[in-house]
Image 1 (cartoon, rainbow, N blue to C red):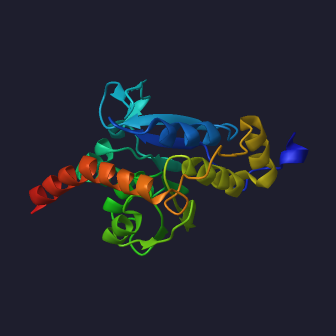
Image 2: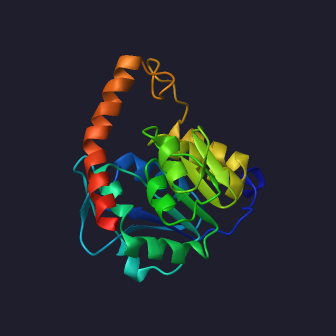
Length: 235
């Protein structure tokens, strides 16, 4: 097996995935599954405080630990969500912890609107980055990042992905960077990861204008009042 898959280029032993009330299940479970294929790795789901959390769809998650108990990681992954993500972008205690962990990471990554949280720490300033389709360029620019409209982007050790499923693409690319293409291909086959959407859509460019308009309105109604209220509290 080693003859075929080779040896890792980087020594990755610990992966931490941030979880919080309102996190998106697929944002965290896609990377959790893929990065969990790294031989010998320990993966923790890390909560802001003790107790179970509920995802944006109501699934109950049992975290392994909390941010107060974690001081070092090789990989940090920050998944996105909806209103819970917005709250996390204004959580200064969380931002302090992310910056502390980032000092020693090999990779610091964000999925979907998790890029907003990472951006709010200041770590994406002057870095190439992407995010969930909704106001992606505006949000990345707000945090000083150089927005690129791609499925995933890496700039040094910082990796960011577009929405939800793009986190799997990013994680596979990270796995290739860690262990090589054949190893990543073995994981892709294990997953039968060969996307063939049954119809066109899935990005602003491929989505019909009426559907895109509806989704923009829905996101705006759900997120902007909360963002506006939190911005006022900062002043």
